[in-house]
Image (cartoon, rainbow, N blue to C red; front, side, top):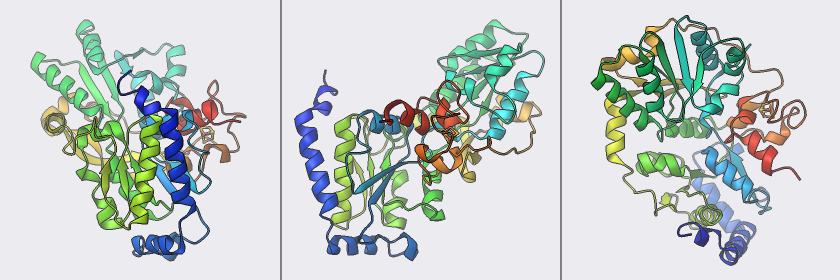
Length: 386
Ligand code: SF4
């Protein structure tokens, strides 16, 4: 099948694996001193040493799954692949889950959501638990489905739980515009939408986790293009490669990252050029920002990041559940023992959580990273166990 088979070719994969192994293993003292020049604006703790692995982070849940599924994680002894805050369900904070649960308790309200959010635990309940106690929570497959439910239930207030990154936001913006056109008075969204580049910047600026390059998200980049990542080479002197999701896409991206390091020319490259255009999708971006504006947002593990969320513009405030309902809830701690926050920052791996595969598994998830199909813990459980 075109665009699939050629990106799963075993012979080409083998060649790429060899080249990546050579490039990562043969990182000479000269290469490593290039690394140090690349990072010379960072603290000494962050500089590459002669003995350590090069570490690349992906910030897309689909990449996390693809890397585990293809067995790429353990292929390279000198490369450490770590996952960042790339799963939209996982980065939704406990407080935001609690807000949604509060909504379900309001009389005459129907909460609509994509399926993954149902099982995410809040501080004392989950949507699934609320359903079992009689709450009207409905799984939808698209935002227009939620609008249809509002149309069919004019006496109810229908709230759509908008979780996602730049990829899904334009469709939700189009749904709001449709609601406006039809004059809906009973349709709302609660926007937990987030934008990825500010989170990447916070990770780099915080210096808590050492990152030597980014595998940039494919789907998000279809919308935003390459420009929003330029701060990575320009301000942090690090390589970044927009990457597809087939095994050869990911291998080629690793190769491209290593070549950038070797040649001391950090930049944003587009490995996924068969899908991602350098300028992204300006029409989708226009629609998105016609309806939303960037606003501060709370991320699980990362806290509040300035301008990293998407809030409805004032002219659409009648659709904004945050403004139309009293959703104040207190901040509560993560589930006891859960390491999701550290995992989303790249500071821990799923298997380093003491609950992984024991009290926390896909049937009985303790944290969101085990709930979502795109969560690091779920991917590690499904594909990463020996
Ligand atoms: Fe949280 Fe479970 Fe992952 Fe541990 S294994 S970090 S408890 S989701």
